[in-house]
Length: 111
Length: 120
Image 1 (spheres, rainbow over the protein chains, first blue to last red):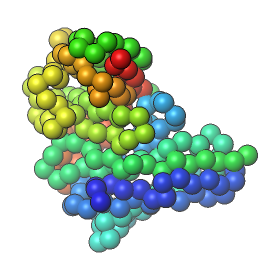
Image 2: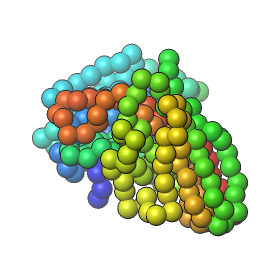
Image 3: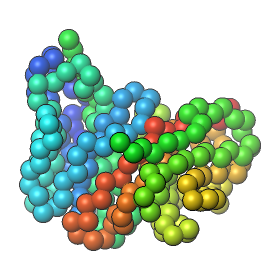
Image 4: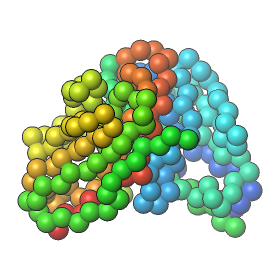
């Protein structure tokens, strides 16, 4: 599999519930970023976590990073209909000036 | 909040035609990028640009593609002779500092809204 793979590919939950998305990667990284993309729109940066950090919070978002398992998770608490979007993790590649994106998780929040 | 702006938002072009996609990166940023996303697929890196030259490019970025910073604010992507498989959303992005080899450099890359290119 490739760098930056999210699971699940699709997630549908009720408004108010928490949503958890996971990302796995293969190579060593410096940082991992999560982005949101509404259908047909641009990529909105959510949060960046450095490889020496284990957990980071931003509002209703909580990101964890486990470099030993080469995995990250994004938790959205108290989900809202407006959170409906695709969520991507993006990893850098050490020695390269680029981000490698996963396939994304399509999150649907049902009212 | 400062943002990356892209024009046009949509463009339809005939196969073989030249296309120029334009971007205005965030004003104090020094590193510029183009990515693309074919419908339903992953976002893919095309090229990074710093100090008026390409610093890295992917296999996708062949001789049909070129980038330019013609003035102090714009950053363009040119596709010389478009093919059907060039149909995609093209994202411009920028960052303030070098994003790469330095551990913990942690520079956020900001993306624009994208230019949707359809080649017919």
